Length: 275
Image (cartoon, rainbow, N blue to C red):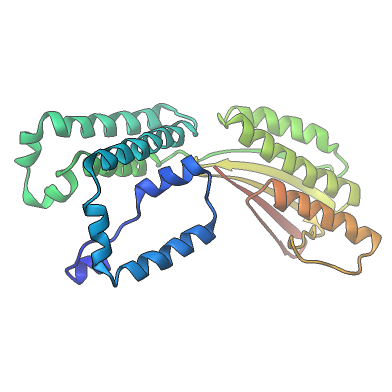
């Protein structure tokens, strides 16, 4: 946007760099920062660009095939990494058909009004625009929610977990995501049961919107303390040691984010898993 306002070449990310990272396995941020510094220095020496201009076309073609292969395979992996239901089938199918149709019926798309040309001038622009719009439209009503409630504070957490697992299977979650969320939830429920922090009204709710899976645990009682991971405590009493160990297990291995709060005797714990 800044480049457009200044009337210069638009700036963008380098899709081919994703292919290089995937092929080499080098994904450290240090590499990105170092490369950014090198590019910033090169910007003051335009003559360096002639090195790439003078490169033989055979070399450029081979590099293009190399990066494009990884880009295509990476794109397919991203598309199939989620549950492809009817909505996602339409998003992927229509976007690909429009992109291919742009090359087959190029005269039709060239005849469209000028204000549509930025979105239809190339197959990539048309397919990306269509997929984004369709995804936003089909996102309406995609959130699924299931919950398990227990009025007895002494209820066996294993029974609650089994009920939660049965209802979560109806949501069509990926097996890895399901097991990860259930394992973390079981750890929290077992810890609440052993420490007798719950007085009444334990409710566990799963909400899935195809982007995040949120496990909300609400009850009346005392807030479960889950300290930050990575903080070194030199002196720990025996009760604290287990609590810190549980926090390290949960935040370090399973949930992507955790939130906990208490309002009066009402306690809420949220475990967020990014899909």
